[in-house]
Length: 461
Image (cartoon, rainbow, N blue to C red; front, side, top):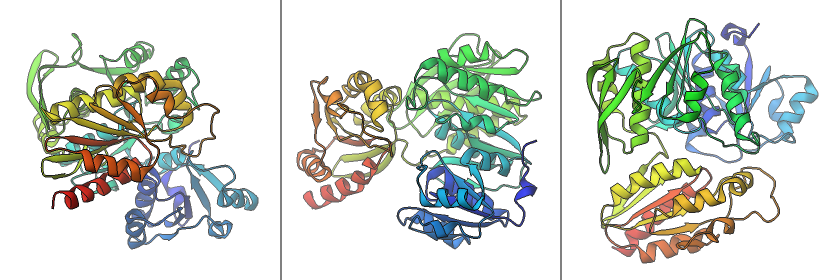
């Protein structure tokens, strides 16, 4: 029998890597239930300061002694098995929970909606939380990114619904057992854990098998992987969305704008009106369609859901506009898979208009770089100038012969420049009014965006 929220009452939870996007959200939810929380991370941040203000005890060093006194230790796949705190917990016999298990416990008393998919999980989860707030549902949520309007990645609401981003990267999303789920798409990624596309598809089938028999799955009919999943589910109720004819919720009259998007939503042949977004890209219209279909199936008003989607202002690191100096626009985005990069750069091309699109890309993990080098080269070619940094390891061991030059060697407009200072200086000096500069990747490339913005301010002063 799976553990329930009441089992955490009076317990002390210690989070290893508490500053991470997912872990910090769990810590916030735990604190809201008056659970004692401590944690550690490798460096201080605004996230850690906020957790301290909420009552958590947080350190900026990983030491074995940090675990002393804890009843349970929570860790994520990003934590090395040799982490001293993890080793100490094993030595003491302290109960160790994966991030997914901890989240499953925290939402065990709620009607949970898990948002899964290779791409779009964070944005779709954020959209769903905002749309349900517009319906006065006050959902709880735990998301792997910051909702721009609220500045938060987690919230304990007063309503019965809990929106959870379901990360498939290590297969642990089978822990959630949600009432309902969204699957935005299924594609091969996380090749360190899933060597083949079939293994990814199997993981999503395992995830879908945990959905409540009284619940449902919302899936994208435009995506081959999600479509195949839905066809393999047997008796579970399914709701489809997309441009594809015959979808339960169909989009048409699509308009893609520089900083927004618009489409008519048709539910079982009846027009509901228009989805009007302040975030760009066809992919975001599909994300919004997933939210609208799910909300309707949960019994909420289509007009309220559409209003909520209309006030959604995005999520941190998802086409996040950092600033503009003398007509030079600086954008930061988390895209780190060829499919995501293509969607982001097509949106960025519309935003750039007649200006140049300059991309600084940091590949994430050696295994992903080796598997998708040609795909990266092909999609990055949508930009006018591409600078590729060295691979961000994310703790992964190097693979002999795998560097970012695997990508740039396949490109006519790709430059391999591993030095951050050299990259920022080059872009600052060469930028022209009208250009869009985008920092791209799941590593620390985002740190360059404010540096470039500051350099442009000095240059054009």
